[in-house]
Length: 192
Picture 1 (spheres, one colour):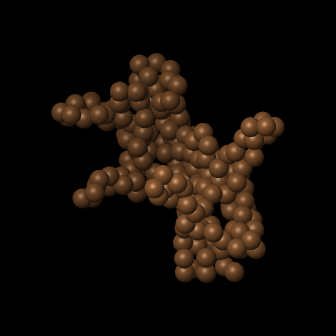
Picture 2 (cartoon, rainbow, N blue to C red):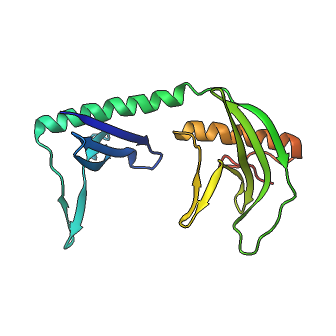
């Protein structure tokens, strides 16, 4: 059977990874790799969770694969999770090409304001238009975006939290050097 898996690593407390499984390019459904701690032994393990729903105060399984298919899905999901974890181990170098501070404007009712624009290079790509913003919890970045009727959308983005964090830290550290802003806060962004 043709099984296609897309998985994302998660940093939630009880979910290690989540994603979508497509069978034979015909049917698609979500799955989660969830943590489980045995109350008797204290041993932590994991299991693959399939779609469920609550009806009349009780949880019911919506999708129940046969044993052989479940084993194939679990194997495919496990391989995809290993692939995602390897991405976080071998992150490319990031070269800061430019940081351009700008005089911030304070739009009414804005939760954050732009205070700089950056350009970086990685994997042979030059990425222009990374915005440096300051919000209530400190500084953060947005990758280049476009606006549509349903909001803002990234044009280019890093796949995986580790790469997202590395780009953010590199840009914000350089901004810190240029502007003399105080050190990093607990959220990974700069704080004053």
